[in-house]
Amino acid sequence: MRKDGSRFWGAAIINPILDHTGELIGFANITRDLTARQAAEDELRRSEQQFRRLVQSVTDYAIFLLDPQGRVSSWNSGAQKIKGYRPNEIIGRHFGVFYTADDQQQGEPARALDLAVQNGKYEKEGWRVRKNGDVFWANVVIDPVYDEDGSLVGFAKVTRDMTDAKKAQIEVERTREALLQSQKMEAVGQLTGGVAHDFNNLLTAILGGLEIVQRRLRPDANIAPLLENAIQAALRGRALTQRMLAFARRQNLKPEAVEVSALVRGMTDLLQRTLGPLVAIQTDLPAGLDTVMADENHLELAILNLAMNARDATVDGGTIRIAARAADAAGDKSGHRKFVCLSVTDDGAGMDAATLSRAMEPFFTTKDVGKGTGLGLSMVHGFAQQSGGYLTIESQPGIGTVA
Image 1: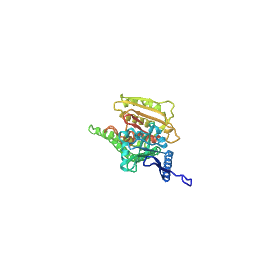
Image 2: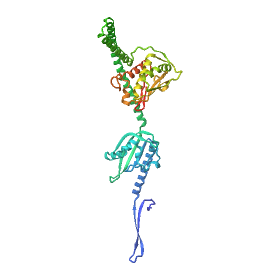
Image 3: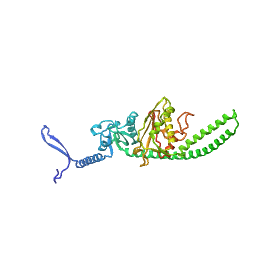
Image 4: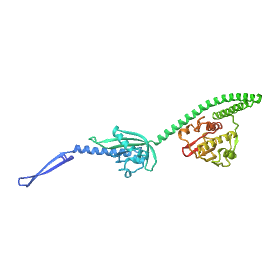
């Protein structure tokens, strides 16, 4: 305390004073005024407390420190909210627990710290794991922290949960891809339909001429087989153009009320003979479904096409399941019409994503040369759209396909 009564922060050193005989004769007191330094230290403590409160109040970001080895040394409320760990559950553990098993095996946590030191900062987005095992899409920033001597003392890590934004991005990309696929199929359909229509007219003229020649030609054992082969080739060409017209939604349909369950039950013997003895057919065809407006003959052909594709996907035989059900709201793309969903499921080889994306393109096939035209699914797709419905295909390699 000063003379005027004010206080100051001091450092006092008191040493005893002894005479030549060793007797204590007094004390030497050295006092140093440290008020300014103490005020600075108090201000630093207040600033640190404010910073800690600021960091703890941030809940949209996980903000925490790592030691040089990558062990968690601090934890804010945002980190607890995003990652699910309480401070006593995570402090002292390596931050690699936030990475997926694949990333851990590839050494991604150690690589992140190395890159942060090399480049002065590390930033990346990727899948991370919460305490409960759920994954989320995270934006991660790691900055190295150095002391006054330039020695690495740890890392500052900031993580933001970007799952909602990632899901929105994926949905936008999926919608864009679906739109592009739809536009491509529409363009291909228009081109295919125009070509098929012109070829159909040409083949009609060719067939007519061949039939006239066949009727007027005198019997000739050498020429008759050649003429018959030409007629059969023209008929196969006509059948091919009809499939192309089906894909292009330009075929002549005669819609009528059809009971899908009854139609499929009536086809069971035909399907079994067509698919062969190695394939088991199962059906789930409930009674009481609404009738659908469709061309019965073309609907039978579409079912047969799907069943034959399913058979070809099963190498050594398998099971094909044909089912019908009333479409739920999720399947009603019009928002108000009712549908009957008819599905053909196989347990065959399945398709990867690249093959699945092209499955309905005309002339695309994975079968050997001479074993398929590549028009089966495209014909079903065109018939379904022309009939007011749609065709969807789900497939996974090694599991099977649902159409």
